[in-house]
Image (cartoon, rainbow, N blue to C red; front, side, top):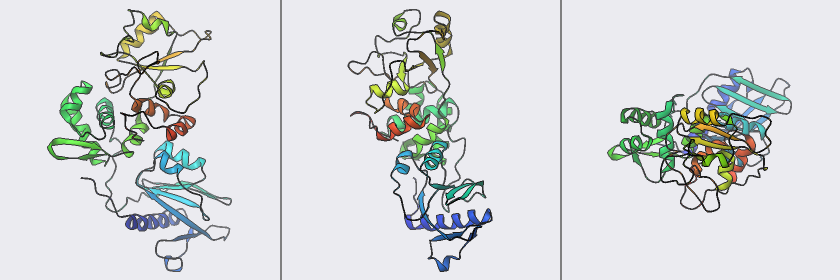
Length: 344
């Protein structure tokens, strides 16, 4: 079972880590006794005095960062791990950060630091394996848990859903649990830890896309086997921005914005390109294809009223939105319809 450090313990440990990080890059840190036990005050080379406002999170999400309130003193976020998208969000907001895996960034009044520092694992926190989510089995295991956050799943169920070997799913689940991204329960079942698991999955989510010359009308052709007439069997599914908008995400898309469809395998993409190769001169909205990296997208499709194409689950649309800053802002404001859980 997952254990969480008490807030006071995390704050104290964060203060120690910040002192060590600034000292490691040659910045003077005033003695703790003169500023309070957990307070940190630094003296940059220009001799000024800067008191720091330290915020702590195990793995800050986009939403958590957005809720940070401005303070009188410069803020620095300390976390066990800060994913790339979270770093960009912090940078855009002018907030400093210390990733305990070994990087410090701080900007204040002409004073700038962006440097690798000595890693400093939080006391009691496990070492996070950078490969906690790897390969199709890792992606499928993480996604399956997030699809059912309130319904703990076992290895057999996930392997059956993703059509993967049970042993590979078992290894993937152990890796997630060891990285504290999932919680081991009784009877071999696992429960996701959210939003940490979502953002860890977003960090490694495949972004490969293949542009085609397909049109919406072409998708009805029997040669493609897209299966857009029914969602009761395997078939292509719309995701990314257009999929998210269909589920109610607050994005405004122009008429020529491309459509992304997930397909079962590379064979489907080759067939589409053979029949409808990319035509860069066409002015109509393009259709891009991507192979479902989990096996779960094309097997779990939806057809809400007035939506022309089968949709991927909101989870997969949300994962696609993490690729760009504008889309992440919409993701922050988006809660999927009733019947689906928000895990970001």
